[in-house]
Amino acid sequence: MNLESLLQTEIQDFINQNLNSDSSKLALKKNPFPEVNYSVLINQIIAKKKAKDKLPTWFSAENIIYPEKISIEQTSSETTAKYKASLVSGENLIDCTGGFGIDDYFFSKQFLSVIHCELNADLSQIVKHNFEVLKSTNIECYQGDSTQILEQLNQKFDCIYIDPSRRNDAKGKVFMLADCLPNVVELQDFYYQFTDTILIKTAPILDLHAGLLELKNVAEIHIVAVDNEVKELLWKIEKNFDASPEIIAVNLEKEKQVITKIESTKSYFASFSLPKKYLYEPNASLMKSGGFEAVSELFAVGKLHQHSHLYTSDELIDFPGRKFQIDAIIPFQKKEISQFIQGKKMNVSTRNFPIKPEEIKKKYKITDGGTVFAFFTTNMNNEKIILLCTKL
Image 1 (cartoon, rainbow, N blue to C red):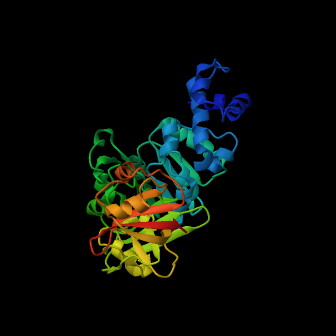
Image 2 (image 1 turned 180 degrees about the vertical axis):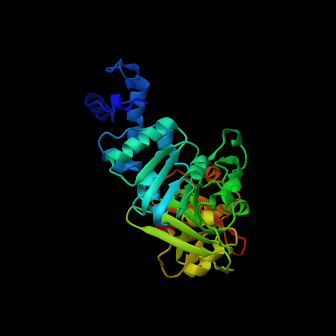
Image 3 (image 1 turned 90 degrees about the vertical axis):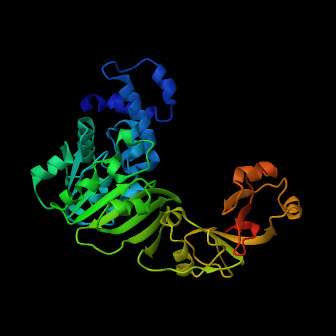
């Protein structure tokens, strides 16, 4: 890629002036800069738009060059990268799957030196340029296969970081780490020649138990959500660790981090209860953890039913998830439904209930929205109930 042509002042001005333009319409116009491939120019505009909220440091810096938009879509956000960097520190780190380099920028605040490995030559060139723009002088970019680079460097690192991607022929299969490149399952012992600590990022679709069957020496699993949407799983591996891992459910919000730690070796016991004054719905990272008994014990809240994953208490507590005041408890019976539900405006959710929300809304002519939150669920006595709530 010819970076110099994209860095011309008039071209950078054109990109910035068209950030609010319709890219598809812009693409139909005549290229004002014939010396530059117009599709590359349009991609710069699209990719920079995508970076605005996800990558504000890059978006606000002048003369940043962007890769294909898929690299922007697949990269860590600054929010998750900052959290990830807080988990490790030391003299040196090598990133085997560098990509657009967001993680490495934040790792470079925690390590004296960082090595960014990237197979794609164009992407490696772009990232090297951007690190220079951002004055990240302690990051070195290597283009090529990271396993070969590790062998050539033949040195010890305080941490090896890997974000494996699924092979094209793995689409449609159950998500397995062995179906990814690099194959961290096969390479784990190889990595131990160069480090005692490995940090692996995977997509949230990976089942925790499946990952533990494939990987050895997992010390911590971090389930990272942003604004209640799970974005990634982080597997911290220590060479000599031989116990069960700690599971850390994290929800990153604008002003705070909500972190719940679950010991996988501990037997937690849930207490069960009929609905009380308040209702709690765990955040997405806790739901992914599967630690439903732990939630009951750790926060001293009653579980409505073994399979409902809703909790209740008489006193309002600081809970890692959505909190509601229960205004009415309605038996799921025809008479009560027609009186309290039929034709109303409310937000419908189901937990451990035989009918899906869309079917409920259609059947009872419920319209979405308003301030009422209706939970269709099952209580500890196996009775189908509706909880009408106000969100707190």
